[in-house]
Image 1 (cartoon, helix red, strand yellow):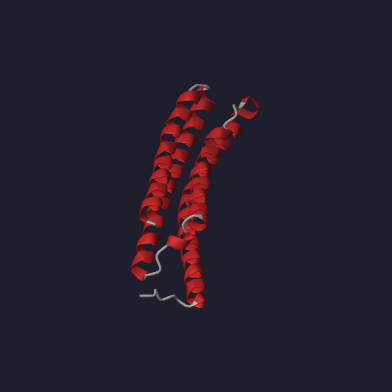
Image 2 (cartoon, rainbow, N blue to C red; image 1 turned 30 degrees about the horizontal axis):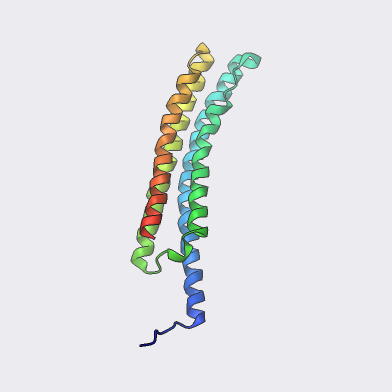
Length: 166
């Protein structure tokens, strides 16, 4: 029995719809992760500027504590690129599938963004402590790196999930 073929216009429409769904998914995930990064960097930057105002020229370099939360935005960008370039033809087109996909984007973005937010809070306390005592740089990086691991685990689990489910 011969297989029925869908009209070419329908195939193009579905491909465009899948791409739009993948793009919306990636943008949503990256936006939520980016919000966390922005808030985290803001907390750490405020503390670093406070130390700079107190110490003046003797202020240690605190840029790493301010910039570490930015990496979570990059994780969101990686997931956006993967969704669009690797999986866009596999994204669901039915309303239930799209809803589940978008909810998962919000939760993944929230996990990654929360990691950035808490990393910024630790960075802010590190700036204060280093400004007052001059000690604790290694411990602060270690603590912030541990928080970074949460975002990395979420990103890796999401990539594995995309390969398995899509």
